[in-house]
Image 1 (tube, rainbow over the protein chains, first blue to last red):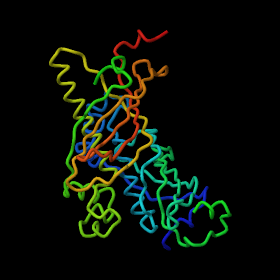
Image 2: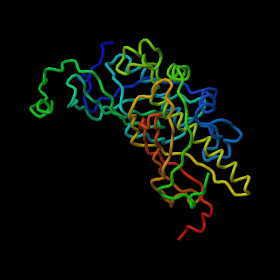
Image 3: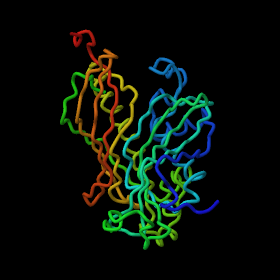
Image 4: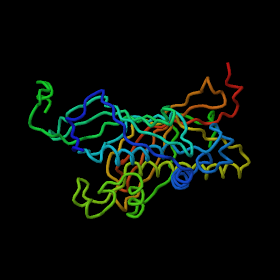
Length: 163
Length: 163
């Protein structure tokens, strides 16, 4: 697979980024370390909560998505990280034994004004369950290296003058 | 947890602090964010960060852990005084997460929360929604992380709020 650069992303593109089976053991292990609430730790206690059973910490879902993207998406890209995350929505619980898939949609691309070798790509990442129901969305604008920083590549006078 | 009615905008809580060791930076990164500057001192020295530093997700997950521990301590105090304790509900998500500075090995991050909004829920009269600005500051007083999260909190007297 060719190494992806900023120029390879265009708004509207959709990519599948792998899938994972979420186990009870890993839900509990994550919660014991980072989010020790009964709904993430203990099946019996979780039955009394709003979800009626054990569910993964939302932060665990973020971390699983990060790992899926590293393994199956940005591993081949000139990915340079993100200075933050615009929004995360936890839409539905992730339960033990569920298989979740990650999907990326490119929302927008933007050249960096200060660094001609870098561009931003704004994504909406979705985690969806086996019935294709979104369980989490995450909007983030990571930086990618540019393949041809010195050429305006027909992006027009505005893009050229920004640099 | 305080009941929804007892929580006011502007309320600030120091929830605790955490020192990031090389072992826990690497252990987190190995599972969720395996990139060279989170995994290996020598590779980190050659990266843009210059030194081993924590995954931004790690910095955020430690906030979650400290918040749960903080509420647990507070609740113990309330129970000892014979006061009722409110349930902390699920969170719909967060926004504007910013990783402002790297968290390097050996850094001690102090975390705080500030209530920025409280909103009753017409759809769920037993619960209210609060929004909180969460921050992490290092031992030099430099902010390293901030974000705004929302969470449901149990109401003391749901009937009383109904029009």
